[in-house]
Each structure stands twice: as structure tokens, then as C-alpha cells.
Length: 271
Image (cartoon, rainbow, N blue to C red):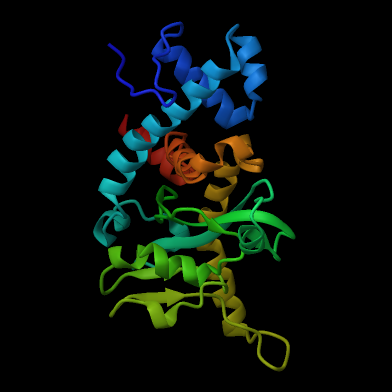
């Protein structure tokens, strides 16, 4: 008996679950075309589509809904237990926050097309907010929003701040001017803006360096997410799965070796 309720309404019996997982991972990591996968595995494009739609949704339910969402953002106490040296100036930091964009086909609807156009990327995109803990683990990723949506609007609508408590600190870049949205007692550190003189003071320059050294980990995590080639351009036939695909890729990044060598070394010592 199959563990899946297949997307197309009929059960795939010609491939083992292992092979169906392999097909799905090849799609995510290499962005193989459906007809290419059909040719490689000697089957029809309909079977490939049925597998991909089904297994992506199943993996998302297990890894994202079942683990990432239920665990949530680690407490400040847990974060301090694996705090790297780069965060020594921000010992109360709980997350570093950033936004990332994913290209998509131009929506056929005129209004949707306008909303999806990102002036920053000069193309049609969808955007998400991601957060990493100080140890480099991806601990939050929002749904995907139209590319024109501001970072602050995504933070507010996704309710990620509801997971934070008084005493927590967020590190972010200048696009996250969300001071008016912070829960009581939660702090935000973003780089200072240039003064009218056109340059930073010595203290402001030091602060920029310290924040950049700490929050670079979320940018490195986003780079790992983008290594899943399907996110270089999500095909129109899988647009209905865009958010699940993105969030699943985030979960798969956490299954890789730790992002920080310092954390990886500690992990090896515990083995």
C-alpha cells in the first residue's frame, strides 16, 4: 500500500520510494527538465509530474510542517549554548534576518505581473524572509510573497516576530527598519544610516563591521538555498508549489554540514 495520496489520483508503482525521492532531489538540485527525467528513468512525463507534485508535498509536510515549524526558533538559552565567536558582541542575539528573492515566469495576469516585478532585481520574482540562529542553522523561512513586497511588510504579515520574547535581539540589514513592529522588550540592531556629512563616525564604522560579521551567516545560508537550481527559475507548471519548494530547500540546507567551521568542529568532537 502506498504511503502517498498521489497528486494525479493514480499510484506510481513502477518506481520504489527511493527512486521517487531521487527523481525529486534531482529536480530540486539540478533543475532537470521533466522530459529529461522521463528519458533518464524510461518513463512518461505524466509519471514524473505525478511523482514531483506528490513527493515535494510529502517532504514539505514531514520536514517543514512536522519539524521546522513545530520546533520553531530556538530559545535564547539554546542559542547561547552554541554561540560562535562572531556573536560575542551580541550575546542576546536570537536570530539574524534577511530577505531573498527567487525568479519566476512572468504571471499572465496583469495585476499579478505588476506585484511580482522587483525593481531591485529588475525582473519578476517572489520573495521570502529567512532567519538563522547564531550557530548558522536556518530556523525560519516565510511563505513566498510577490517581489515588490517590502521586507518590513513580509515580517509583519508572516508574524515571525510573535516567536520572540523580551530580551531577544535581532540582527538585520538596513531594509529591516521594523522598530515600530517589534514586540515589547525585543531589540533590533541594523547598520547605521549615513549622516548628512556622507561618512560614518569611527564608532558607527565599528558597529557596521560587528553587525556585518555576525549577520553574514544568514547571507551564506541564503547562498546555500540558491544552490538548489530549481530556485534559479521556478517553472510555471510548478508555480503552485513555489512556497513548498522554497521552504523544502531551506530544510534540506539544514541537513548539510554546519555552516560555521567552529560549529562543525564542536559537532565532530561530540561524535
